[in-house]
Image 1 (spheres, rainbow, N blue to C red):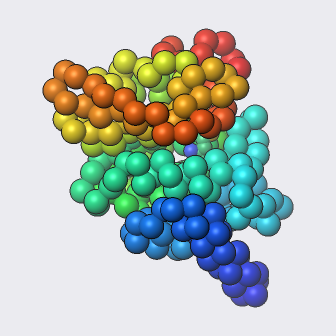
Image 2 (image 1 turned 135 degrees about the vertical axis):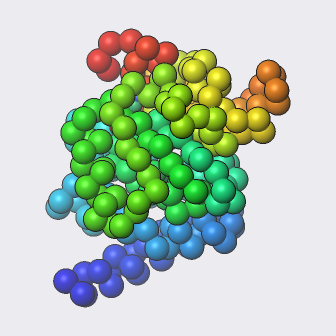
Length: 220
Ligand code: SAH
């Protein structure tokens, strides 16, 4: 068991160096958090060895834990300093939420599939991460009780940016979202300046669809 944890630590160190640092992400707090957070605890039992691969990994219910680089990139685009309240839409495994929890003050993460939400809650409490709340709801509506958010990360593909999320973004806040078709999207950063929003395209990505009132209609 000890040996196995050591092996995962070595794999994780290599993931950070080869997939994250070598691709240009250098933020020290982010790299430290990635080095610490045991990604293999967020995949399904038996899939631990895939957790540090340079690709997304299935987590059941037709969903995936995103590729490490994409998680790191989206987190770095949020530019967190530790004081923020962050909203995540699409808890999935809880890995992105846990990482945000290490870098911000408070995280609210929304998941539409109750079984995934419950599994993520267990994983997070098993790691003593206590500043992340996982809520089962349609995340395209956001979560007004804890708004406004200094950062919002949407980790599923939206046809358009859901208006409720723009409404819940704090002044100077940053919204990171893959928007486009079901098969390919642009990762975008939206920033708020009063009632005006600016958006910037970062790179093409492929996420699972964001389903719900302000997302894709139907069940997938
Ligand atoms: N961030 C996750 C990976 C996200 S996969 C991780 O770190 O593991 C995308 C997730 O978004 C899936 O779990 C899917 O069920 C969820 N999802 C899709 N539409 C949603 C919606 N409207 N509200 C909340 N969650 C949604």
